[in-house]
Image (cartoon, rainbow, N blue to C red; front, side, top):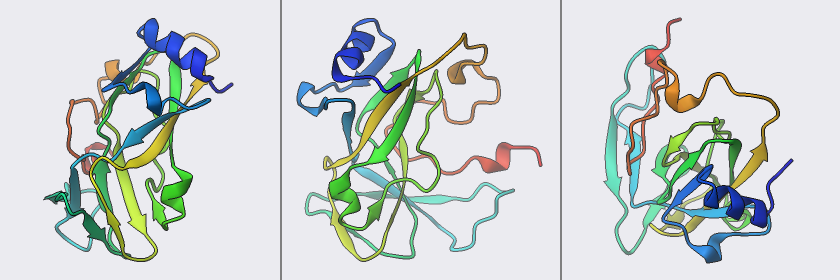
Length: 178
């Protein structure tokens, strides 16, 4: 089941959900709006290798905004740092963002119980769009978990995305053994 606004507030009060900064006007009926941070990143090479560490170049979004282009994957980041200790968080794009032709994640919309960080966004677009730091970009939806948890994300030895950051994080696929 999806948490309602009252259940999200209760989970925040109980410290099972942490949102920093928390803004009450961003709480919806059953979701919480998150905003685009000031950093983007793009891969330095057009050809990526899943077995190698692919370098990224950081882009600071200027006050006048930044125009994203089709055919390029931009890694963005949420302004909000979140922790989720008893629920499964899902990040979905806001409909207003989708109606601009922007996707905010290719595959990574679900977080794990125990995820504690900002969210890296996998941003792509169908036509050029000017985006701005601080713009509403997505919404977090929280699902109840049935049963006890043995393997919290933030306690896993092989967790790759646990270091707190306010910048987008590139793929760490190369750390997997395959």
